[in-house]
Image (tube, rainbow, N blue to C red; front, side, top):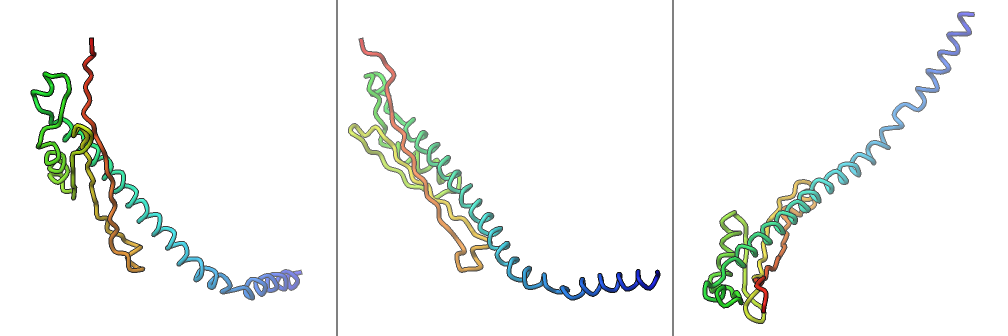
Length: 150
């Protein structure tokens, strides 16, 4: 009875032993793929966050520039941007540490356009030679009059 039990245990151990090390090639192939996906998720997330941040700063800068209106145009009921609107918008972004450029355009120079650029350092993409990615977003703000005619 004991001999039968020992034979069965040996048979089980032999079967288990025959597949010993078969997981090694599987792990060796799967691990780099898994690390690549984690790296892309990390760097992709960083780029996404930077794009959202650039958009938020561009929008706030455009609004700051659009707030620069001439006092005389307010009294006339047709607000127009001051000559300093573009520089105010650009200064708003650069004072927070971002690269930005701004301009005034529109039929009556009533719109401010701002572009903000952010450099994102990559961690895992650096392994394939992409050490930095520049993201860029822009925004437009327009001066409007809410005065009612009549």
